[in-house]
Image 1 (cartoon, helix red, strand yellow):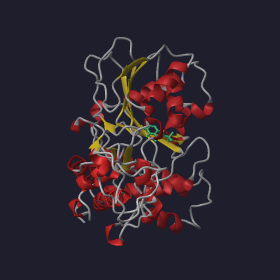
Image 2 (image 1 turned 30 degrees about the vertical axis):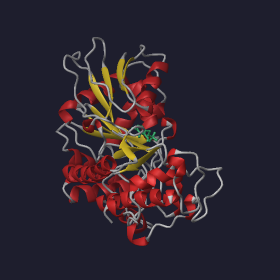
Image 3 (image 1 turned 45 degrees about the vertical axis):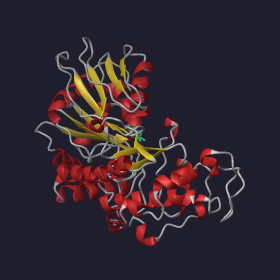
Length: 424
Ligand SMILES: Cc1ncc(COP(=O)(O)O)c(C=O)c1O
């Protein structure tokens, strides 16, 4: 249903919704609202509504209600792929051809998806992106890194580097929440740490190599929620790393890094040095294992199967351009709706910095996001909550390639329906 067809004009609804507050006695149908002048004189003709009791008409509902920003929607075909391998690959050794072939297929699929030039290598290991940050402090940064910090995740890598005793104090460039800083060259920096998509705020930036950076400086990009959904160019990046629970619609617990020849050379050089490195965080060991399509220790095979299936789907449909276009279509719907709707505002003010894979939508104070989320959840629409530490009255919506743009459109109609019901 188009967004304007909610049964109740949103502007009128907002006029009335200020009457609805938890802890206040219900307004029975037909009751007069308490008098007191201004808006308080509004007649409210319905009871206070328990969000969980709101029923969204089935024809408004999306076909799939998973809008989380990671873990995110897994396509049924990915689960089918696990079932298809139930007796042949699940429960078999990761040192034998079957699982090694799967890892090889993932590495080839990523190389194809990103259009990686010759000499680039896909390196992988266990532990997700958080563990990759620690591995990078041991095996990727020579002495000093610069971090563009614009949210929870970009700040975590900066903290990991600040706490590593063998590294110099990192340079941290911050910007106001809801924006991103610009890369700027700085003498003495050997690794520039960028974040393609800050999942906590819904701000995306295009990775670019800082002009005037020292010779040999690397650009490492946290692409955890961007990889496979946002465009990037290998000429601007040396390490593009991520975990597969976002655009790749798999489970977490794995890290993957597309590494340029310069990054591979850095990893090998540090690995040959006498810097102490725990084996599980040693990128040299990870590189050697990856080259033979293995991980240093035992991986979750089901995660690899889901990732491989998603890569096949992405590449068969046209690769990264197709995926990015699909997310862009969802984003156009979501931000267009948020701009046109009275009670919503895109949190990221600059349209150029708005993410096409994670939308953050502020709600008017009169509309409690917790209530909206509770009502959506009761109707099978899941994980639209804002990032917990951001502390805003906000919805956050995953728009990864697996999520059908038609479902994003349906979601906007469902939100309108819920907000109208909350206020009637
Ligand atoms: C941008 C970004 N970086 C890093 C992480 C941490 O990833 P992991 O949970 O795989 O350690 C996340 C998780 O949501 C993320 O969104």
